[in-house]
Structures are given as C-alpha cells and as structure tokens.
Image 1 (cartoon, helix red, strand yellow):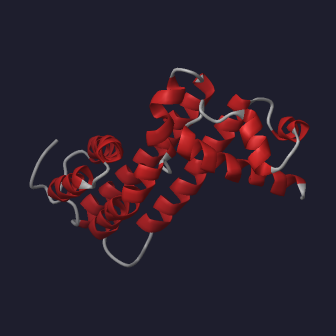
Image 2 (image 1 turned 180 degrees about the horizontal axis):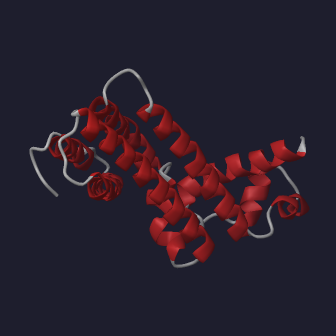
Length: 196
C-alpha cells in the first residue's frame, strides 16, 4: 500500500470504529488489527492517538463542508429550496447516521471536548464553518427575496444548534420525531412565520 493510501486506510477503518464505539472506546490495538497494519506504521502517520483524532475530525469536516457547499450552490432551486433540501437531507440520512453514530459531531462533542483541546478546536472550527455556509445561503436567499429573516447569522447559529440537538434526541429516542419537528420549525423560520 502506498503511504497516502495507508494513512487513508487507517482513517477509514478508524472512522468506522469511532462511529460505533466513540473515541475513547477505540483501542489503538483494535484499530491496528482491524486495519491490518503494525504499530510502527501508525506512528509513522500519526504522532499520537489524539493527532489521529484531530485528523479524523478534520477529514470529516472537510468532506461534510464540501457536500454542504455543493448543495447550496445547486441550481436546482432557489436559496430557500436549497436550504430546505439540506435540512431534508438531515431528516432522511441522519435518521440512520445519528442512530449508527456516523455523525461525528453528535457522537464526539461531549466525549472529546473535555479530553482534547486540539480535537475540540477542530470541532469549533468545523462547526463555525458549517454555520457560516448556512448563514451565507440564508443571506443570499434574503437578498433574493426567497427567505424572510432579519438576522441571517443569528438564524444560522440557531438552526445549526437546534438541528444538532434534534439529532442527539433522535439518537436517544431512535425515532425521527425530533428531526421532523426541526424540519417544520426551520420552514417556519425561513418563511418568516416565526422568530427565534
């Protein structure tokens, strides 16, 4: 396996384990065995388990943000429709993703924020970027007349936090009631029929 391929393979295997067991629940020997690599190879790519976690989270956010940006740039609808498509994606996919632990923000936020300042900072930066993408789309929709809000930034922050909470409740309850409620509330807010 080439060097970059090996690092990617370790991250891919690690993601699956972390998504199921959490970061602290994943033992390094478990990761190495599942990835089929010797211990020395791990330390060739990562200085520590914490650095592995940072890299894993950064890659997660890079992929996530690229998908969000692509969705918001879609010409399949106006800004309101693109935003609602984004939230509908949360309902359709996070039902599975949240329940199976695939949403690393929901899975790891509480766990690693107290353990690793470096990993917490990756999550702070990643969630900030996600909120900025949402805020920019809301503002463009406001300018185009698709969305009726006063403060795009405040609404983006509220919605992202509200949806994370809904995803957490989805994980606890293992139903999509919270996600459906979030979708209805989001629609009201974007249409200007309600305020935060």
